[in-house]
Image (cartoon, rainbow, N blue to C red; front, side):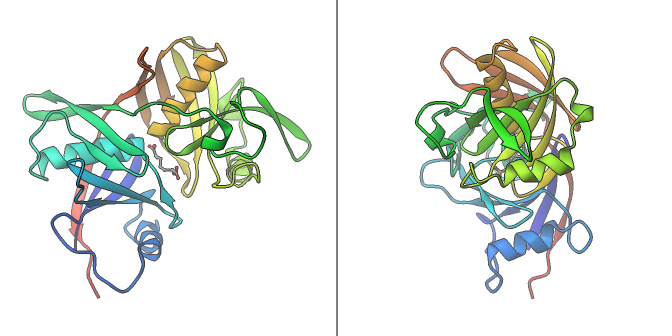
Length: 280
Ligand SMILES: N[C@@H](CCC[C@H](N)C(=O)O)C(=O)O
């Protein structure tokens, strides 16, 4: 089975095109994702991305985290998929439609001399109702809400970009105990489907620095849906404007929350190598 190793700002994926080839039987997808994404015993990646035929879009993108859980959406992966479809998948369109578990997203390629220099994705609209995150509690949105963890009070803003995000503003992201707090917030009982966690330092109204603990993958170098959720939370808390450069450990994404309520994410996508997975 052929695969491509791809990344968006260091958030890396194993991409398998199941429009062109069949997934071998036997092991279930969750087990395969855990095995293939393992950093020592596998190819190594934050997630497995499978492309399937779609009746309503150019392709259906399925995202499985490195722990085997399935995610509704992935911002960095969708840019990589758009680049792959244009360069290798035979879809020579500047604007594509990619179906995800969170709905159909619309990437637009930024082409320079026929090559994909960047991808700008219409990431759809954020959802803020607590039940849509999903998060336990009374109806309404969750903006700067106190959350007590091991005797310490944090203030969280919850945003769904199809997948759940818990955003916390901090004075200095470098001082955050990411490995201690990240997994505890990810699995906090308030979030029945767990959550991605973003620690955000506001540099000014148009620039923020973010460290991410991803649901099902742990610390990653970047998170596209997380960058979108960060800007929504920044606007709702009146810390940022609607157009923000989000600096992540792996690089920078430009996020725009437009008046039509849609979020647009612009960033790079890279192919690292391709290879064969033996089908045994
Ligand atoms: N890195 C991604 C998000 C991947 C899914 C996430 N771990 C989840 O379970 O929701 C991104 O770039 O958006």
